[in-house]
Image 1 (cartoon, rainbow, N blue to C red):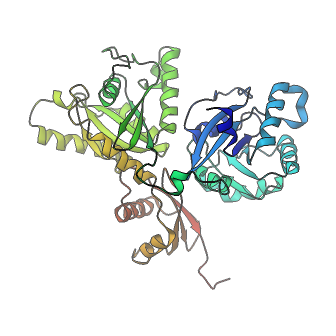
Image 2 (spheres, rainbow, N blue to C red):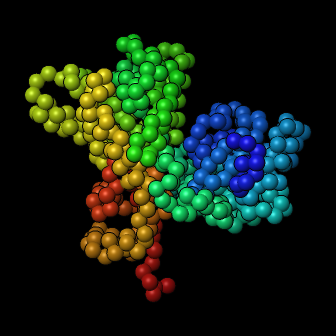
Image 3 (tube, helix red, strand yellow):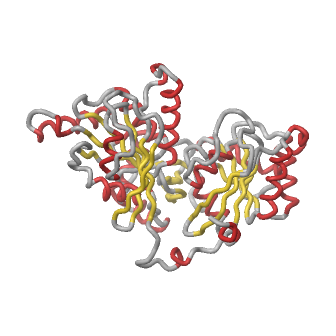
Length: 445
């Protein structure tokens, strides 16, 4: 994209101390792995540019190198220079801090510097678990920035709310403001995951009609991620084929260790995950481990049983037995549809496209608070008094449930409520997050 295009849209700049998660947040917002993410503080050396869009509002995103204001002699001069250039052109600044660490002098100095700039600033508190948010938020108000957003850059929690605020004043594109038949294609990112040699590369080739990934009967042949774009009915699907995941204790060389890391990263970057199983081997322990990665990441998910054409015996009873095995092994994935296919012959593969779109739309669905509260009225939920429910984020859909006393709902009650919400509003193929908040009844002190 040329400079005139970049200058035509607002710029959001991410700043913060080294190693607080700026690159991970950048990758989360832009959906691409442009920054280098690593454990070494200050690994991002230059400004990294990316294009992003939120709710139809396009913007340029800049990831600055780590800044430590009071130790300028220890920072490469280039980082400071690049950061200053970025901050001058920023329409909004996201100041990222580590919610699990104490507030440092560097954080306070950087906050003062940003406030002096007089530009809109949001304080994003990274790496905060849900249960800790409210108690820890007060501490960060001491930095003097009013707009505070608890986020998990790694898992995406809270990022939508942050972007709602940061981009609120940005102009919408013409196509977003006036949707019609000429609206640009929707983009859905899909990660194909599974154990080595279950047929991920073959599935990618069948989905895209190309022989680009290396296919070999040797387990773990695919070393790097390969992505391909496919257009179907006005939707652009970007498929990422991840290297076979193995248990960390069994990865013999650095390439396979890296494949585990990359696979988990691609799960985080994807909108929808295809978990590939081998019909000839049944469900094995590593399958449930890999499925857990997708579930923990809050991704929409489809279980794909590959090599179904190689299964001997009556297909109907075999299918019922396999579905039962999946249900028993993946109790936490009871929301995921199951598809039986053959990546090699192509049988059942075409049906994945509308199903991926359905799961993506489920994960992206927002239910108005009024509609949720009409649902609460007819809920007859006896375990705890529920005053109201509001949905605060998508992908995954997350709901704050305001109840009569402190403490989370019991696991079984939370699961029951999630299932009721799913049945009522049709959240197929996506996990649902329930967060409990205590609230006194109206009229009581």
